[in-house]
Image 1 (cartoon, rainbow, N blue to C red):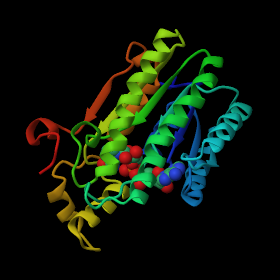
Image 2 (image 1 turned 45 degrees about the horizontal axis):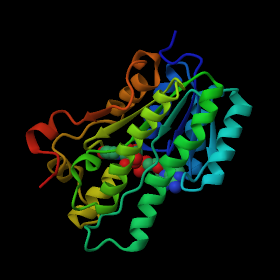
Image 3 (image 1 turned 180 degrees about the vertical axis):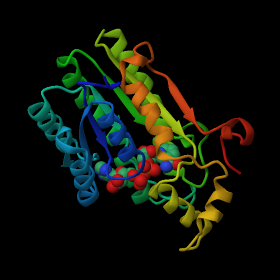
Length: 258
Ligand SMILES: NC(=O)c1ccc[n+]([C@@H]2O[C@H](COP(=O)([O-])OP(=O)(O)OC[C@H]3O[C@@H](n4cnc5c(N)ncnc54)[C@H](O)[C@@H]3O)[C@@H](O)[C@H]2O)c1
């Protein structure tokens, strides 16, 4: 029996990186998985590779109307909703003095608005399913405030606080819905490769250089296993909590990189 056998999960931004790893692991452990993303090609390919228990739906998380449709399609296809992984996120490399209003709105539309809409619309569906687990992808940036990614840090801080509000709201109302946030350090995914290339200011930063910058880069599965734990009933007494995954980087180097 899989660790999330019989459960139905939505994973946003699951065409790539941490979302793809989480969707694969949830499917392997018995969940039926709705993979959503704006990247149709890779999202559909992942769903195809996972067989009948997975479907892909095109979904821009910053659009509330699309959330309503995604939840409806999930319920009509699989009959219930137990797990939501609010994973989709984008980064713009710019400090507070160089962040444009467009940068700010873009990053917060995907990260902050997307997570808000996901929580808001998943809760009623989870209640009808008898409960559920919401897992929000924040970041170390949401704890420390990374100067190089100002809008991203603000969005991840909002997600961190939103998670606790949702957790307490659901607990107070006895919804049997949990909500937790994950705060990875550097994990090697396309997002981080892009960040490193912008940060070092070259188009061809080698992964050796990247490994210098992120001396402790993890792998997507290092985060996916935490998603799996929080999605499963193994974590039934865990809600409103935050989980750092950084192999000691915060302790040894501080939460704000220098
Ligand atoms: N990789 C890391 O080191 C790291 C560290 C901390 C937090 N995170 C967070 O983990 C999450 C996943 O990051 P990743 O590294 O796998 O990134 P990634 O770029 O590999 O994947 C992000 C996915 O989100 C999708 N996406 C972008 N805009 C979208 C939208 N409007 N609607 C739906 N999907 C959209 C992209 O198409 C992509 O498939 C993000 O929230 C990120 O901020 C990552």
